[in-house]
Image 1 (cartoon, rainbow, N blue to C red):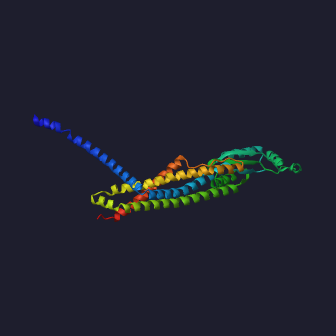
Image 2: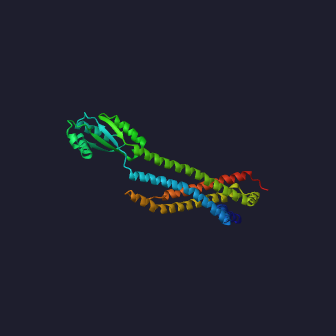
Length: 329
């Protein structure tokens, strides 16, 4: 009887051990996370001037591509606001009567990429030319109407670029009854070249500044590793894993990148606030209105994440390179 009772009371022991083991593992992970975060913050607080200078360099490096991106975005918005939509002017054959011309217009409306078609008959074209030119008396001396019927095509938004407009022009020119198609794309080509140039400059500056941020964070983490080489030596001697040693430096790199991006957003908003009144005044001189826009919430969040990832990767490369060559003494 005694043995049976002992066996019954001893049975739940393994479950209790498993629960305590899982709690210990969970608590150990949290403790390691707290230790790494405390170590990172203490290192940054121990050298406030160096940390502040590093964050400011990162912020300035991120502000330059951010400003270039905002310039490109505002130039694109201004182009869409101030310039009209590109159009195709289609001249129909003079041999077409009104019914045949309407059939050609129906075919043009079915073309892919066509939004609207404004049709002017030969008589309407003559009337507009008479009112616009002021040569009414000279036109009355003509025996026949020399002007053809005209169709003005406005493409859809996704077809309003140089490549798709050229493709639409070629397809319209092949329609039976179309004599000539003209596309006044001189201003459109200049505008596309200008926005493309601004975008390429912004992209190049962005790449260079990202490399600069990568090098700055990597160098800062490398100096932090050198300052803590004695601590790393002790951790290696007592059997600490590379992941345990890596964690504080990874957090430090990510925190430097995040802090620099946060300060960069603040500088960008200050710049937009200072220039907004100037841009509004210049727009009023040209008789229009334009609001200068900064980075949106999505773009700001993306900048913070990218900067934190750059800091994480730079810290990981610097620390791993050091640990591979490190031998505890």
